[in-house]
Image 1 (tube, one colour):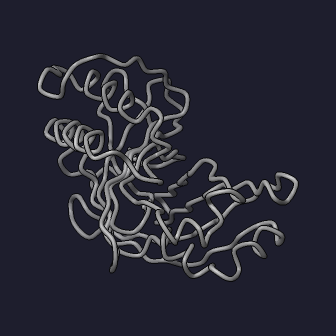
Image 2 (tube, rainbow, N blue to C red):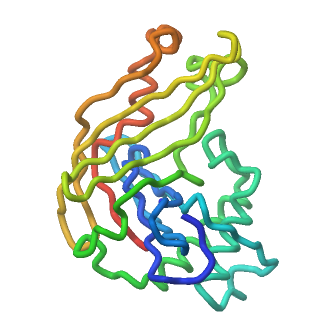
Image 3 (cartoon, helix red, strand yellow):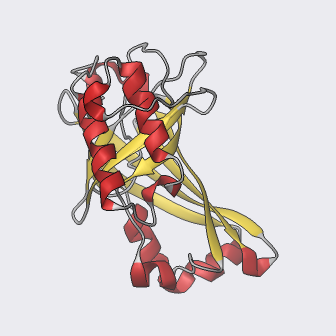
Length: 240
């Protein structure tokens, strides 16, 4: 309900993550192609609004040391973004304002070169499996403490699997619990989406599960809080 960037085939920066409510996310997409697909999108739910970026897992990228105004190609802008994402842990636990402003500047620069102005007319570009690399959604303060994300629980990868033919998306958030002999598990959220405009899809939550049961026991008391953060209900606008 957003892939990695080297050379453009038309790259989608879309965030069908329903990456988190009201979000713009950046991810990578796994596709049968050797060249990666990238997508940027904005999400909105009844409570949140964020940006997300994604990228393909197989792609390799090199960073370039330029300021946003110096970038000349889509490829260089993408490289600059991935360089800026380094060490940010996807932005989930906060990003320094200077770094956040730089990322936003690069995202807007990339969006200005969007090769697919009507993305919902060719949703096959976002079909497949995506890995979240950056989001403006954050888990801070008491929410992070209540969910045990300071000492007990570690966040793993975030994936989104998009089935365009069925109009469905599945978000998978991986966890590991250090206090439970490094138990690993995942939160799986299933959602449906419908085209709302040439650039936007409406997203509806269907169901969610946490496996295994031992991990569910850890989150049971604050499950509504956890789901509230990752609930994809709302809309997703694909901006690249």
